[in-house]
Image (tube, rainbow, N blue to C red; front, side, top):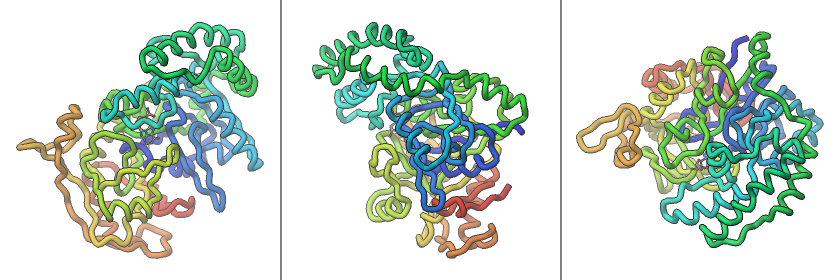
Length: 422
Ligand code: IMP
């Protein structure tokens, strides 16, 4: 079986958890390749609701899970999630790549301090230490999972790095550091004892599984427009949610992935700062936010709401080369008199059908919309033909404008509320 990758086509929170869960049924290995517990995936199975931040959603189905080299791991969160899964009687078959980065207490405090210092210009990060952790990786002063799993090496690294970080917190930001060398050694020694057994080479595992023709699923976190290079910089995360990010985030060659599923909501949301061309405010936004439960899985922040943005989806397709699209949360639009899709942007006399690279230009863009008659979804849907014609027209338009076939339509949080058009 060739590998499939699942990618967020918007600003994250597209409902990837549910789509990964859909594919995970047949998968033999699920691997995560970027980000950390800034992500939040919700999977609803019958009466059980699972909220994951780090562990791939495939864990619900008892699949072998890999946390690969491109991720950033908060050990306390990892321990909590393992225990959450095991409490339900499921077993975790987990491997963590020795190259993955560890989020340390200084990363979390520096994340908050730097946001505070930016004032109005803040990114609106999740405050989980993601940016400072990846910055240390690039500066070659990160602690990797293989260092962390060896207590002697871990202690030495903490002794080497923590004093400089304490100085930075105190002298640059004028704050009192929330940790000391001793407290960090004590806390992390405990985490190391619990997690060291998961130390592995996930690159080897994933590549060998693909060689053995196993069904491998690669799970992206965040979304295309939060990519550190290609997103709406600087309002982005610090890893690479693009499909290309999986190659370095796992350690695999360019021709290893056969299918790339782009996941997009039937509308669009964003948490944190940054341009959002199709944003809507007022009572309609409140209504959709409530109906779609659009509050961050990680931070609980209300998500910003907007119409589906086709320049974004066309651009996401150009960067990820989707083989198919999964459209999620169609039910949230049900009952509206009118539904809109942004077909292009205008800034002065310039028209854009893709997202411009300059975030300041993007911020000046105004949306040009095509309007659709609203639809009401019937209580029972068992096939595509059960959808109202107005919903079909809307979906066909999205498909035509992005040139990607829609193969999954999700119309509720439940596993069952999914149309499989493969
Ligand atoms: P960070 O990843 O915590 O540094 O946050 C950087 C930006 O990415 C902020 O705007 C966050 O709200 C956003 N972000 C990070 N992770 C997610 C996610 O999983 N879903 C949606 N937005 C996210």
